[in-house]
Image (cartoon, rainbow, N blue to C red; front, side, top):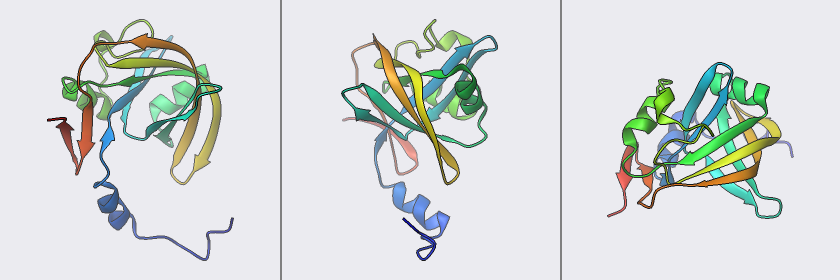
Length: 156
């Protein structure tokens, strides 16, 4: 499909429009010989039940992406409403080793999904990672951390 005849809207307009989309907050992490690399993402979703696949978008050039590509694995942690600080730290590239367990799952998150890298495709300034879920790590019971209109939110 050729999109060159449809250049799209300006980036600021697109960013403003998407700020109106509420999403859950998750952290993508990998543990390797260098320790933990992690980043906060809102672009995470299930893709397939059979086989169990998830989809995550990571910005091209991110340190976490490079380490996921190298190790061919990653973990997605779905954050609870009590984990706003963890999200903010990972968004700034300041993930703390102590915040993660041996599976690279954020401690006290709602759930962690350990994934093997199944596919990787470049679209615009992001890469889409498809992960085959190889383990589910049950977490705490609680409410999800949400992000809407450029701010963290919680269910009321």
